[in-house]
Image (cartoon, rainbow, N blue to C red; front, side, top):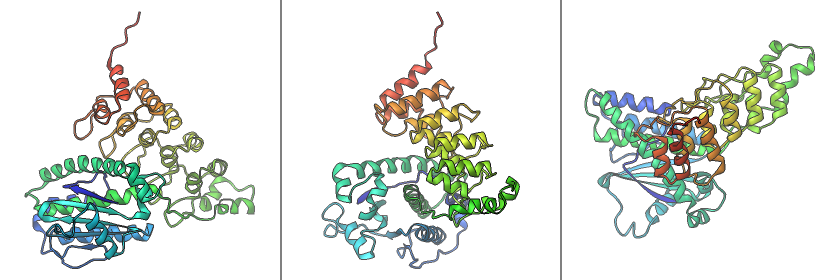
Length: 404
């Protein structure tokens, strides 16, 4: 899968962003960058600061250890010749094959002379990236790959352009062009990693029968006594309750919660059983967490409450259940989006589920005037991507109702 990115910025707020902004705020004081071919990143053309290169390489090493996906980043001073690039995708395919990531890897290349990014998604990863089954050839032919990539790029462009401009204003001195390219690289890589982390569950987990070891030894044991083994965590920081939530094992989750398992215990990805159940459509487990002390103000790694991903992913039952609580319906996440905005931000035209979600949010008092970082209201965003029916619902909500 080959695609071209031109002056792209990332759509996610990761811990990596803090690193990049620290560079923006002090980039003029950077010493001579370190130049070497790192495990995942090669910048022998000396295009970006070495500190950024080292950071990106470190993040990709961690990502490969967790997922097995090898992501390579290359910076080239000049774009390929006409002979090397005589057909769409041929250059990236050839280079990916040479570097060993043609089938199960990712290659990201920046060409400085034309300020252009290109990305190759390995054939075996096409379905994960596109979010639907099929071979790379099938997904290309159907247009699913193109649609997935375009949606990703639109998010990347919009949010990171805003963040880059904000970083420039915060900086005491104007960041160099090389810092900007490094910023783009970090953004593209971070967003790409998140796509694959969302597409797969790499968390193996501990044997679930550990939950009942203490209870079997002492059936009269109190929840406080059982708390120790119940809160045992796997290598990804997941408690037994979180593992049950991943599996949507309602009865086990019910038992664990009854025995005192913490519904607000965070894993390595900053998820909790409550947040994960809300985001992934685990309605019955969500109800259990709400009945046992779920922290309605808690947010995920993107700064979103449980309501926001529930609305974005089309989990109507979860949305309705959460709207029965005191959760902040107008909370804005790190990306600048409310639950209402998330519900309309991607193509939904004709979906009864999303019509119901939008209507439920509006009926509960969602503020349809809260705009994203580019100044677009939910109605404007809906019109922009063809969700005219959803835009109509939002517009209708603005009309004062006259009581006979």
